[in-house]
Length: 120
Image (cartoon, rainbow, N blue to C red; front, side):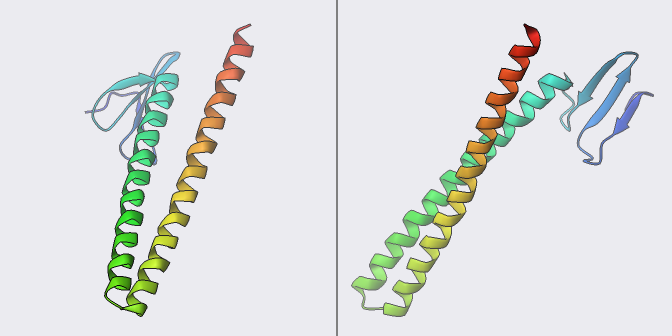
């Protein structure tokens, strides 16, 4: 259903549409965007996905701590150690995601500053 000037990206859910000097992109849903707007939309989708992943990991940490406490209260030392280790692993994963979010924010700020400087 793509037009004659459409090329599929390596990611099969996005298509590039060449119309003379105008290049647009179509996502898997069918929305059509300019390159700049598509980039902003993808950034926003990624931010939401990372925020969701962070919330899920926070919940996993909270659950692991609760299960650790239950194991300690029940005198199950090995199980308590297991949940301590798991909570620590989840916290390390959260650090990775938080660092990724901070990096994305820095890149977005740098990009915005570059765009402003180019417009002047």
